[in-house]
Length: 310
Image (cartoon, rainbow, N blue to C red; front, top):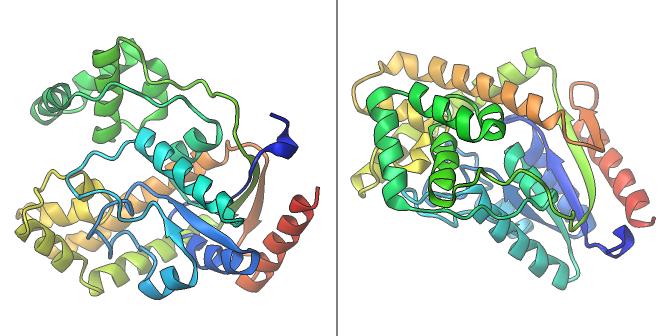
């Protein structure tokens, strides 16, 4: 398929707390787009405060997709995101509107845009065994296994990312093959925009957002979910803010240490996001330290108009 015949797709990416959500809403509203969230935490129902989900008012203003599509104890994989996002994009295009991918989960964005083959190999028993290995002996034995059987995944996955390490080994054990990382034919014509800030500014925004989430009741939300039967090891509780909250709820972390630990872990995650997203090809970057949000919006609208008219 010639690029001119491919469906157009807008992408807005950047690290956590950089300011994607507000710009995405304005961009989508001005060009007739609907937002497809590329975020590994907002997929979970009931996990709202610590994931900075769009408000009901924002969802009424601009239609959102791939939000609240999984129960907190479900394992939501990149393959499932690829499938859900592809279906959302198809429905958006059929309605004559533009799809706008918004997020900072780089692996998900790359899998969607590069059309990586869907990874098979789901086996709850194998996964449970691997998780028990991790819990009993720590990550080192599983990381050594992953380096031997799937070095590409070992290099791409953060060593402490229990869910993705286990998933990569689950695929290998059930299929005899590593996770597919060779792209297919890209199915879309893509305009990529990335948002940046200097580290001191981003670090302060991370701190203020974490403080605001705790004040808004993040820990109460966590306790309420657990009271309704969500286990402490649920995938939804691996997200930033929730995993620290679980330590607090189980008496392993003092209250005064919750905020500093969330901030530390979120900064570490933002560094990994910046490293990953910096490798995305053909990205037009905007440094939000250097311009007001209105100027950033004017820039993306100008880019969009010129890109659509090609």
